[in-house]
Image (cartoon, rainbow, N blue to C red; front, side, top):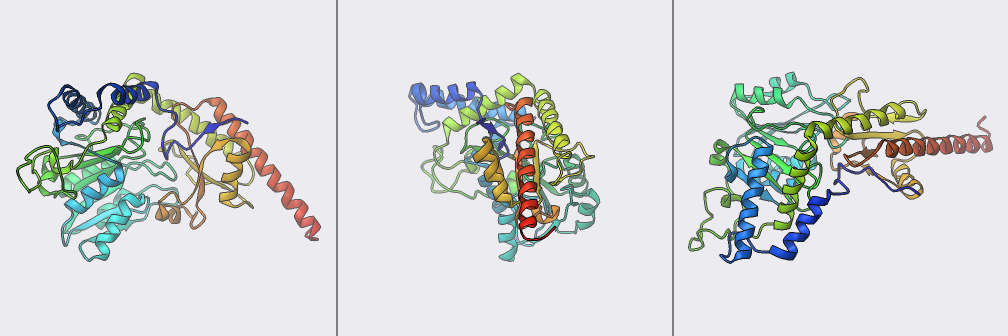
Length: 399
């Protein structure tokens, strides 16, 4: 049985060799805690941490490396930004395609009576309409917080237009790049961002347990620290440092993760972002075009649109979503993810709630042969289902 990994939207696998080697080298030969000691091991960690900030800042086209903040994942990053920046009476606009990493902290603040919240519905294919956002703006609208691309359908949102809208109306723009960073172009300044939250373990090819955000000076003036503790600086003071990055980086950093993330970004740069995007696009188009030809497959997307990342969501008629996912894995070795993907409103938007969908999310290390095998496997499953359906109805006198 083949072993085909198509769950890259959850976490990319495998990781590039330079990522694995860099983590092993750090844990074997360096291992120091940056900002805590002056011995050689600690100083080497300091230099690597500085290089990592420089690498991330350059990758997202931001010119102040101290504004690159490392966290343990993008959920933590978004919680720091949302809970640290939003104030009583602020009006926030987001979309129905968001992950719970955005929706849950916003809903919590709304339920506490802190903020006003508008959740703009996307169309049935997962795309937002910029005019709906324009019409939702009020005098107290302070933030638009959205994802660059859906983790359910892969629909890419018009974030450049959103950035222009925010600029023209003096609104802060916070972007969730979990499904875009490493695949799509991301220019902090061109997009008029106030903050960009990223995660390491998806298309940036880093390990799990590392993420972060980049914050503008303007938003930093507003944002309060959400986590307090040791920073290795101002140890005489019981107050959290106000300078970056220490303001938001309490506790020991995940240096193996940071090193791996940095090498993941270097791998992307060595391959070329456009090369990665074009390969993913080719494989996705092949997958979608063949799925459309299988009777009984329900695709959750606009097949005339090209604005998608590598996620493909589908179901098969007359078979439970979870069962289809299980058979793909157990009988054909195709690693996938089923259910609601931590994005319940997105599934309500596209009409797949409450069962969700089977999601196939390909990556740079997949091949044309992987996709062809997957299509053949799904075709076999659908034929089995149809044959079983006919037999069962015949035995029940249904024909």
